[in-house]
Image 1 (cartoon, rainbow, N blue to C red):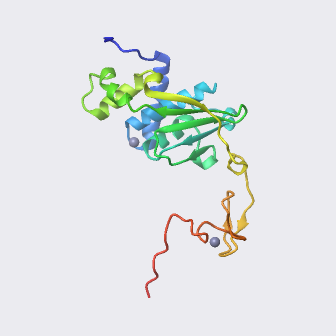
Image 2: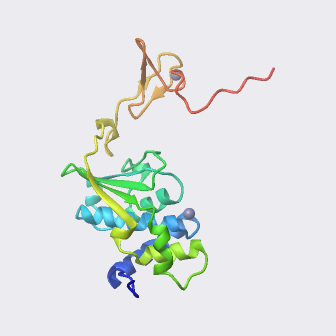
Image 3: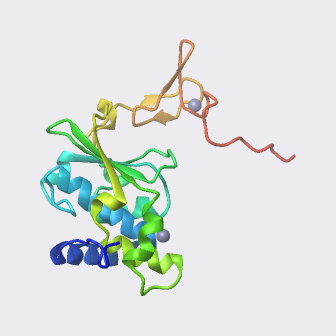
Length: 210
Ligand SMILES: [Zn+2]
Ligand SMILES: [Zn+2]
């Protein structure tokens, strides 16, 4: 057993600490997800040759995908500078602790997946901490990337209407008349419908009381 496990450089440590502080403030608490999300963003953007957070104009080159909601999604957004509100971050709920950073100019993406066995190693990296939560928060700041993550190069098929700058035309629903934006019109038979009229909404209307 190695008495002092391999860690990361002081410069990288400072970058992580600064971004974790910012992420925790934006998210509302400091949690293992903030540290993992920050580390994911630094690693993924770094592999694409970009700084973290992204600045201008290179932020226009990258589209991010987070595969889970809650803590991690907030941290990836805060650390990277990619935003749902700008179309530069996409939420794809797969329930996986993973994020992809897609470089538009090169067409290459890097998918960073959190390793489940990192949790069991946390005690080795933060023996001074008591409790799983504190141990993970401390350990994930200093563990080497290869112990925290698996990395895969991927190709992302991004539809034209999903590009950050895209402004797909508004198309009126042929049943209720509402304008459907973002290329989200549904074709049902020979009709163009909004998701609600197509029966593909996330809710069911409640019965009206009379
Ligand atoms: Zn959290
Ligand atoms: Zn409709």
